Length: 244
Image (cartoon, rainbow, N blue to C red; front, side, top):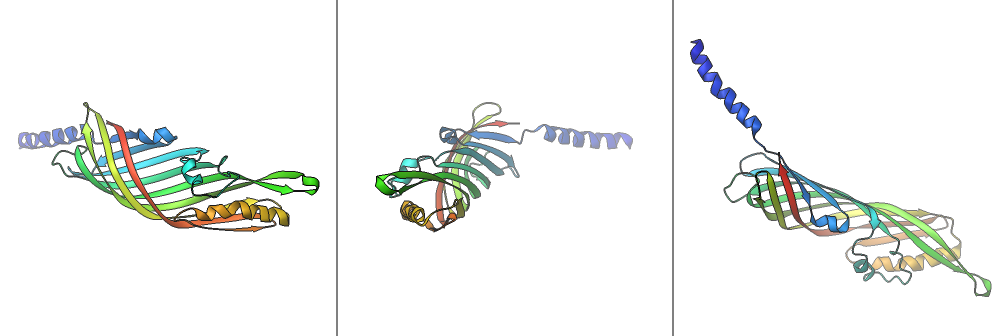
């Protein structure tokens, strides 16, 4: 009887040990965002033979606005308030991947619905020029800072290949998404009536940003800018991964 129990237990222990040795974690870095100063790390883990959970963390330090020339084309801004503007960003994106190629997890063509949360930190200095008697002028700078929060939902399509024993290449071909964003930026400084009007003139152009609803209030204590509206974007990736 004891021998029979031993013969039954040994295969179970062996199977459990072998499963413990399986490498079912995949850590990846997206090479594409590195070109604009972003760091995007991904972690993927299977929950069945053809379904995995994938999560992306993306971080960008507060540096110059990306695609600043595109933004300026929409803003009637003779003083170029975006020249010294800074933008930092953080996002987290969970997704579920459905592999369709009848291969093991991590391999083949996939469709992946996702939800993305984004946080953007904005900082800019708005120059305020005031004319005085005899044609003299003075320029003060109003520092403005704030944050935007956005939520996006969509789906991605892509394919993943095994390049070597534990090395993978993940190409997220396209991932359209749609959602909304809102936020507020403020700048505090005592302003004269003339400076308030100059500031209003400076800010008039930002109301021309497409899609976004932008409104602001200027008083003797500074400025408050509110932004909200729909948000659309496209996710892409070309990531190198290591399985462990």
